[in-house]
Length: 310
Image (cartoon, rainbow, N blue to C red; front, side, top):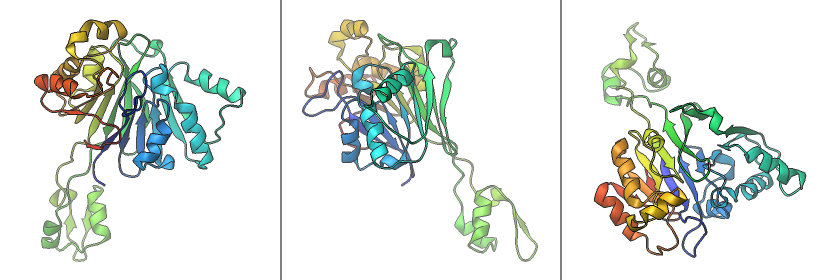
């Protein structure tokens, strides 16, 4: 598989419907994937999506409203039953550790694989600061506070720059035998041929390619940090709870309209907008899609378990 793909696991706000589960979204890369929010029954959606519990690298919770994290204990318990041993990164607002510890003391929750926990409270950030909550050889995840009724975080997953494309035809012209030397050149090392000639990587490897990126902004009113998280991303995943007729209700409850989500994508220079977190008053979410596309044409409507290429 090349590139990232997004799998919405739940697209409903507040409560599940017969067609939509509550908030959860997977971003899958090569050999690993990441989960953003974990509403109830997320573990069942993971099974339906065909994702591996063992390849989950990190869980990133936006805030402590139940429709965004009530599925977390069940998911952790299921991974324990699946004999997971790999360390898991878990990030979210302050309170998650106390919550999990309480469930553990009550013998409701048990898991024995290592968890690297990042709890981020309001005091963690100064002005426009961001926090790194996940780092691997190929990817990073950062967090910024958003603007909801309670303390909430948004996230940005970024793939590190990828090596340039290897020009096999040019390598053959230069007399480089296929095999280990190709790999050395792709890793940025010069090689010496049998005749003593030295080949530099730039002779056969193209310029470094930018990695892909995804921003995740649920739940939030329009705010500067959402724009910063989405700055130049390949795909912004943003809540679109209401249409513009309910803009005052959106503001009061700490949400965004579809049009406001589109304005954030446009201001940030995002390449694509994926709207989600639809109020149950919209059994058909197409009015939300139409409203967003009027502002930002490159908008896609999330549907449970329907993959979206980044």
